[in-house]
Length: 116
Length: 117
Image 1 (cartoon, rainbow over the protein chains, first blue to last red):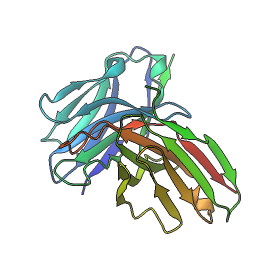
Image 2 (tube, rainbow over the protein chains, first blue to last red):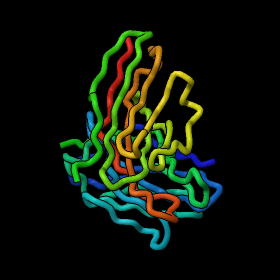
Image 3 (cartoon, each protein chain N blue to C red):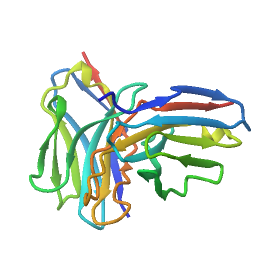
């Protein structure tokens, strides 16, 4: 079975500071990993995803994440926070090789606040 | 490409009533998913369609819940005899479902927020 743990339900950073949102996963098979962002009263938007190949994945809005198999982690980073980055961020995992592979397992989310 | 749309966006109902939600996926997408998101939590998978076939249902989908996708296009999610615990955001997503692909990018709609009084 797959699972995702997001460390920190709320992260607050100053505008212009580094953003680091932590995610650890558990999977018995090679995982596909995702980060989604959710703005208030909106659906989820895909930021980036890792399937295979390069472990450093670049996404939209200047975000990137690195897949580290040895640490079972997929942390999300952005060098310089912007006020518009304030939102809820979800790390997610799905599996390869099963008929139900399209099912996404989400973490509980991290709310990112940006201080002026 | 108008994206995934859901209707209604908000629904307030009294306990015991039936409600139905509609999801219109991106037009060429043949996979459609329903998720439920409660306050402060991530979305939880409910069910999944490949064209008109419902291929998987979560244990979260009790007998009071039923989903259909009759022509492989739009889908409906019905909740019968609603309970206060059904209050949540119901999200729909769709994906292209490429042949031979075990997973592909899911695009989410804005959700339907259900409040059961």
